[in-house]
Image: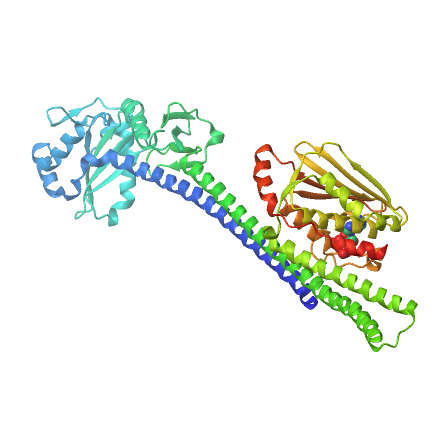
Length: 565
Ligand code: ADP
């Protein structure tokens, strides 16, 4: 068994390392998952911002959806003929002219140098017709100029009939292109209505998309970075702080001076992820502690089992030896007597005394074994009755006074008057007394003191057995009630015993609803304190009824005492 000792420690260490390793990995994964959840939640929000910029872009030319299929040849012919557009394109212009996002709609044929000469350009009026006007701002010319420049480089391999070009947040120009002739027919330019854009459209759409009700997890500001001016915000209550901005989104080829700036706030996803992280960590921690606890418990149990098995094996070997020794003595003495060879009176008496004392020794040993069996059998062998512990202690000592006298012990007996009764089995108490007194005598050297005190303490009766013997050191105190345990020191080694007495005592005390504890100091002695609950009035009657069935008190020590005396 011993050779597996170190293997057991190695396995325990491996088990603990495995549990800690698994827990560590799980904690790491939980944190990674938590980070990933937060990261993907933010990535998702960034995507929403990108979608948002696309949506705004689309908003500026959505009234011209359908222009791509218009016949530009026919449009040119109609314009050359009437100065107006074909009905299909006119219907698109009509839609756009009703849109408050545009201030006006202007058209300049590609050959015109109106902007350079301050000559009139065409304005789409409320009669749904183009009319020349000189009342146009530089915004219109700037928009057309940018469009002209961009188209120049594109035209060689451009296949569509229009191209949308933004002049940042100021205007949008749609170049009408004749792809078959690779020429630009003209430019429709629409300056934005700045008031509507800044005060109505942008704040509204920001609030709609990212207002605190829809997206409590972030605030979005539209900022003109050239002038450091906030154009619009998704949440009017949130204060802009440059330090808090965690993400910036540019607008693709429009609003060049503007940026969507985002700060992520503590939101439900983060809170939920945090809560789930904490929950998981608690469960994991509890599971780890449980596993570690179970492992350590199993290890300690195995160690205890092993120690018990070892002690049991020793005990068996000792008992066999000790049962055989008195038997051999008795057998030899009996044989001599039976032969009739011993005639001398003195020798006859000596042989008789040998047989008697060995028989008592044998009997005591068997009694001890029976006590173990009894205390293991539990309640079935305990028959409590209302007992005056003081009387019982006195009568026990009375029976054994010659024995104490012989042992030369100074007996300090102190029993309080008028003690209430307790409900205990008298045989059990005799066994308890005999074991504790026996130990007090066995484990005392020079100071032969035996104190026995019985007193009342609250609702308990307290019985103390005290000696001034060798005492028990702290590390052994918790083990002395364990079956087969004996302190390993020179006096114990010299004293006969099997480490069963105190385990029997504890078992019997507990079977009689009592408790036992020990206070001890090596070199100073020990005191064993037993408490039994005092019989309450209601219990008294029940117990008194049952007392008639109790067995006769045990008288097994009588013979020992007579013999010794
Ligand atoms: P044993 O047969 O060895 O006396 P016990 O169960 O009665 O078995 O006691 C267990 C061990 O506790 C003893 O071996 C002894 O080392 C220690 N012990 C018990 N009582 C005393 C005492 N009064 N003083 C010192 N040591 C004691």
